[in-house]
Image (cartoon, rainbow, N blue to C red; front, top):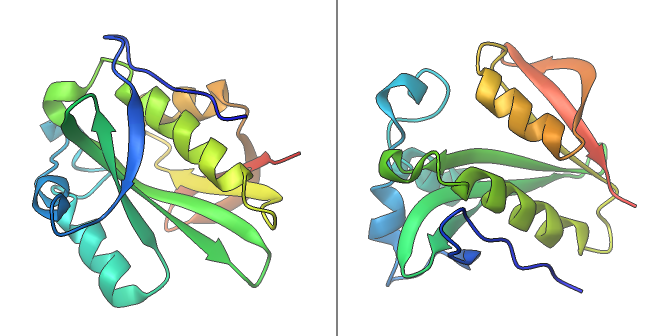
Length: 157
């Protein structure tokens, strides 16, 4: 059974495939200035990474009628883990629970995949709000680092 995640304004937060109709809105997603040391300045970089790298799958994040973010995921066939990356919420949408709802939605989506046993992601140690968000969902440090970022994991049962 799928859970409907909403932001603090009561808007349903859903993930959308990238299409001809929404890719420009997703590409234009820009985080708050102070977050640019942790994520790309525009989600366009992540879209290109998904398109060119053939590893990541980008998704748009919609809250109500508006595209408000980007998130991407990948499957690591070497260790059988699913990864979440490139999560960006538009600066004007931050502080409204969009990040929380997005993370819940993507965890639910990945957890529904039959081969999903563990979800991982990484974040910069100085990004305390991200660390708090991930911990609130049950992610725990693995002891590994990826490009100077803390790797955390969530077992899927």
